[in-house]
Structure formats: C-alpha cells, structure tokens
Image (cartoon, rainbow, N blue to C red; front, side, top):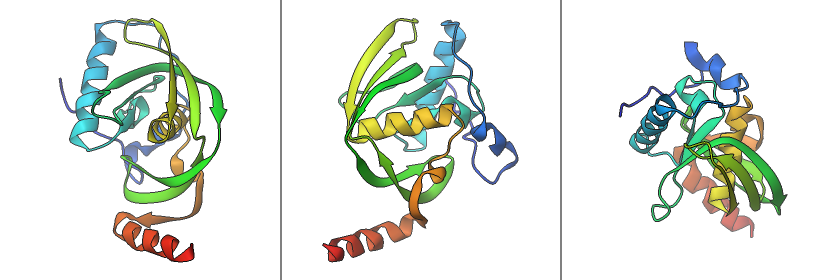
Length: 170
C-alpha cells in the first residue's frame, strides 16, 4: 500500500476535481491496489470518504468508512436508485481542507454499485452514510460540495461558534 497525494483546490492539479469520471470496466489487481491506496490515504487524512478524482484518477470509484464497526467500503460505478427525505448539515472535503458548509442531502437512499470483484451489490444508507455517498458520488460527476453550500463556507474554527448560534435561534 502507498499513500496518494490528495488533490486540493487552489493548486495546479485542481482541474481534475471538476471532470467527469469514466466507468470502471476492468476489475483487476491494479484496481485492488488503487482501492488499498485510497483507503490508506483516507484514514491517514482522517476522512470518512475519498473519491478517485481526489487522488488524480478519473474513474467512477470511491472509498468510505463512516462507521468503524462496518469498516471500509469500496464503491465502484455507484448509482443512487432512490432517495428519501431531506437533511441539511455541515460537510467538509479533504480537497478543501478546514472549510465547511451546510449542504442539503437526502436522509435515506438506496445504492447499486460494483465491488472489487465486479459483483453488483445494493446498499441502503441513511444519515452520515447517505450524506457521504452523495458527496463522493458528486465528486465522480465533477461536482464539489461548495457548489451546493447553503449560505457561506466557514473555517473549522468557526463551527462551534456557528453551532452555538444555531442553538440560540431555537
């Protein structure tokens, strides 16, 4: 395994973040190595998800780990089939370090995807898991979370302050 460089906004390489990815058709050792590298990179960066474009690879693939008990997921060629409800919450992105914004996402969803062996799987997700799937799937379409932010982006140092203001509004 090897750590990959995460492409950040406002760098020379950032254009890859705004490009659409290609479908994965070959499920080989090279793909498995990429998945291992992405998982290691995601964990090292303390992220819950990482899409292939974020490491400079234009393939429809992401990894996620939103629950340590469930462990790591490798999601290839994702297709969100159903969405239900709405939730607005703060999101951040490893490609946009220390910045967060409120984004509206579905509360629940159903997903079809391939695993590393090319087998088609289905998954139901809600809460943070559904949010992560939507965020990473957006990356595969060249869409950054900043394009969906409601209001302004805030630095992570302002989050506790912003949350306190929200509580005072109730």
